[in-house]
Length: 208
Image (cartoon, rainbow, N blue to C red):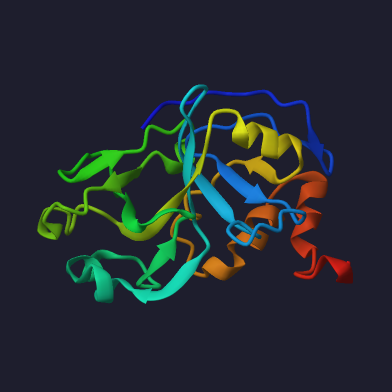
C-alpha cells in the first residue's frame, strides 16, 4: 500500500472543507450522490497517490452471500455479519480481506495498511491464499469484500469538487461496525459543526 499524499481542495460542503485524500481516511457519500454503487456509502481509502489514482472498499454494503458459501475456510475468522461485503463495482468476482491485529505484530499472511492515521494503524490486508490456521489467534477482527472502488488519477478529486464526497477521519470501529446499515449516519453524526446535521437527511431527498 502506498503512503499518504495530501491534496488541498478549495471546496466546501455545508461549511466543512474537504482538505485531503489519504490512506486510512474515509470517503462519505453526500446526499446528492445518487450513483447506486455509492449512494450513502462509506469508503475506506486503501491506496492513493498523485499518478496512480485511488483504491478503497465500501464498508457498509453487506451482501446476502455468506462467507461459508464462497470461502468456507475463513468463516470462523470473520467478524459478523459473516457475509461478503460489496466492496465496490470493480472486479466484483475477486475478494479482498481486511483484518485488525490486537498488537503491533505482523503475522504471516497479513500486510499492514500503511495509513496516515493512527485510527487504522492495526489494520491490514489478508492473503486469502494463505492457510487460515496461521492467522487464527493472530487477528482480532476480519471482513471480506467482493470487489473494490477505484478512481483514476484526478477523478476522485473532481468528484469531491462537484460535491459528491465528504473526506473525514476514520474511527477504529468503522471497518468492522456491527450495524453496517447505520454506519453512514454514525460517521456523519460524529463530525463537528454543520456536517453532523447531514446525518438527519431523509433517504428520499424530496422529503427534506
